[in-house]
Length: 565
Ligand code: ATP
Ligand code: MG
Image (cartoon, protein in one colour):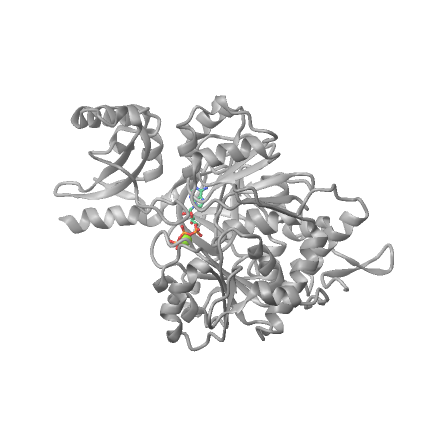
């Protein structure tokens, strides 16, 4: 089939497919977006060709294991033919049409990747969700999106069945399971008999491709709609310079399939570079399985949430020899400098942090080769012009704290989400003057490095001082008693609000005298950072409230503090 993202090649007088260099140039704003683009046709099928001509090493495109001895390895060619079969399942027996939305609630199984690519090939809008969603979450998502089809695994069926009568738009239920289920079409059965002949739809670059839900750290998750190019071309630089991938690399990105981090690390950035996506079907994070996997498989690149690294550095990592690991990444939450230092001391490897959002992808990152300043999220990533602005949309100079924002050029940057589905007010609220506002506060230093302060709502104002939770948490974690902490505002009759820390203790300190330890921690923070930031209240807890993705929900603790009084 003809590639859709082709352009007129002046040297050869031919319509040539876009290359990686073209995608990079688009991200650097040196060339314009092609009119049409389809990630499956223009990227994946090209890698499949390169595989056949030997321009790509014999590395799988997808390498899946489940820890029980099962394994799947697909080349780009196999991914191509299998996803064409899956595309035929979606359009023929399921009767779905271009532009319709498909909710896909599957654990980390190979079919997730097949259906994702199948949706690209058919122009269907892929809408993933984690299997940890409750019936209420699923109902909200199906109704809000007016999805025509739900694809689910067995464990999700009861939840879907309990709400399906309230979803009038849903016309097809597709089950991914070796067993069949009344009222559900069987993916496995239909897939067996589906043809592998399918020609990829010629999608427009700005045509909707996927809807990703935000993590819901601050409230109900928002539905961010993305286009073929926002995800499919927009992650080129991130794959090359942040993930530092080549086609011979194997990346293990641990994100659950329901979040945009899976799109970045396990689909777009990785496959743009022709790298192998490694997947372990771990239902829940488990340190031993994790360490075992890294020592067994030739994984070169690891990407995981800060919370995972915080747990790992509690272990004696020097005892392990990670087979081929070269490059480690993190993002989604701020990374405490102490964790970075410990990871480095124990493994000899740097930890490259990225900062981004479901809505706009990666905004700042520590790119490979760039000096890392521990505690900073790195510099702005192209095509974005990242600035710190005030409440009136004016740019603030280096060193001044304000809101992290992206400058809107004459047109909306192509890697932006197109909208929050059916929520024009919320979409409009992200714009302030010439900027898109992230809702996060930070500082840029004179070298152009960005330092995260906190979500705007999480900043504590005590006796007129503004205190960002991240700095206090980073000071606390330096103390050997602290595994992790959440710092929030708590009411105070004199100061209005004060800093309160919820602290999870490390094993050796669990039986310490709480009063004594509180004083010790307060003293430590006073020495480590400006004394006025120390937590006047400290509470020891077994665990912190977190989102499914492992982000600390400070708002839950804060609301509880304020409701109590
Ligand atoms: P919701 O918008 O539903 O409340 P969310 O903002 O957590 O949830 P995501 O889009 O998954 O949803 O996360 C983006 C946010 O995560 C950023 O706005 C920022 O607050 C935080 N974040 C991501 N990466 C980093 C990082 N490296 N350092 C600090 N914060 C980060
Ligand atoms: Mg958000």
